[in-house]
Image 1 (cartoon, rainbow over the protein chains, first blue to last red):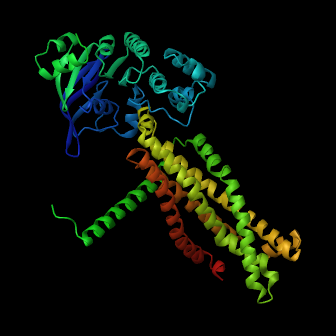
Image 2 (image 1 turned 30 degrees about the vertical axis):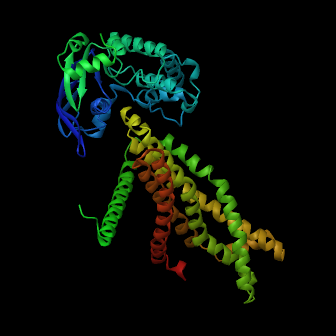
Image 3 (image 1 turned 45 degrees about the vertical axis):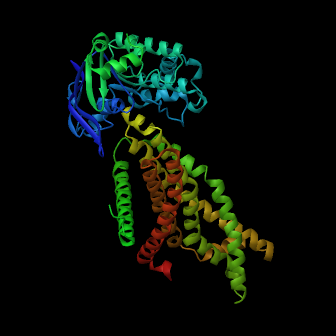
Length: 244
Length: 266
C-alpha cells in the first residue's frame, strides 16, 4: 500500500512557484527524506500531506485516499493517522509540556486520565524529557521544545510521521538520539517523511531520498544513487553537507 | 506604474474596509452555525467563562462602584435644583441598568478580554500553533474561536449584572455620605421605578456585545500576519474594533428595545 503519493502537484504563492509538477510515491513503512536548500518547498510538501495547504494542480493521496479536496470532517479522520513535527515545535504555550503530549490522546481516545498521563510520560521519556511533564513550554530550551513536539507528534503512534528538520537546533548527541528514535519508529512499521539538511541524519533514518530545488525534484533514489548523481546541484548539495 | 490618485487611494481603502467587514461578518455567522453543531467543547467553554467572567469581575466591580459614586454626585447636582433629591436612587438605578452599566461593562470587557483574545490567537497563528491544532485533527476555528464567542456571550450578562449592582452600591455609598440615607430606603427608592422591561432587555443585549467582542477579536487573531508586530496590532485592533462595534450596535439595540418595549422609552 502507498502511504503518501503526490501526483503532478504544483503550488504557487502569488507569483512564486513553490512546487512545480512534483510526483512521488512512498510505500507504507518506508522512510522518505526530502533534502534541499532552504526555501525550495520541502516544508510546503509536508504541509500538503497533512492538508494544511491544497495544491493548485495535481493530487495528494494519503493511504490511497485523495485528500486534495476532502471535506473538513473527513480530512480530520485522515489526520488522525498522522503525526507532524513542526520546524519550530509549535507547542501549545498555554498548557504544560506533558499536556501538550497528552492533548491528542485527550481529543481522540477514551483513555482515563491516569492512563493518558502514563502514556504521555512514556512518550516524553522516549525523548529524554520524562522529568519535564509539568514544565511550561516557555521554560524549555529550543532543543527541548523540539523533542517535546516530537513526543506530541508520536503520541498516538501514528502510521505516518511527518518530521520537519528533526535535528535543527539540537546538539550533536541529542540529534543522534532523535535520529535513532526515528529509525526505531520506522522499524516498528511507521512511514516517515523527513525534511532535513543533515546528510548524516538522513543516512541514519532514510530509505529513499529526494532533492528539491526551485520547486522541482532534481533527483530521487538511495543516498548512494544521489551521491553518484550527474546533476551538479545534487552533487554540490551532497558535498556541502558532508555526504559521502 | 503611475502612482494612485488621492481618490483612488480612498476608494481602495474603502473597498478594503468593506472586504474586512464582510469577512468578519462571515466569520461571526460561521461561528453561530458551528456553535450549534457537535462537538460542543463544553470543557473549553467553561474554562473561558471562568477566564473572561470570573477574572474580569474585580475590574467590573471597581469600575461599577466608582461609576455609581460619580453618577450619584452628578445626579444629586442636577436634581437638587428641582428639589427632587428623593429621586436620586431611582434616576441612578435607571441610568445604570438601562444604559450605563451594559455599555461600560461592554467597553471594559472589550479592553480586557478583546485584547487578550486577539493577542492569544494572533500569537498562536504566527507560531504555527493553529496549524499544529489542525494537524492534530482538531477544528481550530471551533476550538479557539467558537468556544470563546459562546463563553463571552454567557459571561457578558453576568458581568453586566455585577456592574449594575456595584454601581448601585457605589451610588448608595455616595448618597449615604451626603444625606445619611439608609440602605433599605435607598434600595426601595432605587427599585421602586424599575420594571423587568428595564432590566431584562438591557442585560440581554450584552449577549450581543459578548458575541461582537469575541467574534471580532478572534477574527483579527486568526488573520494575524507579520510576527510579533502583527500580534500587537491584532490586540490593538481588537480593542478598537470591538469598542466601535459595541457603540454602533448599542444604538441599533436600543432602537429595537424601544420597539418591542415601548414602556422603556417612556
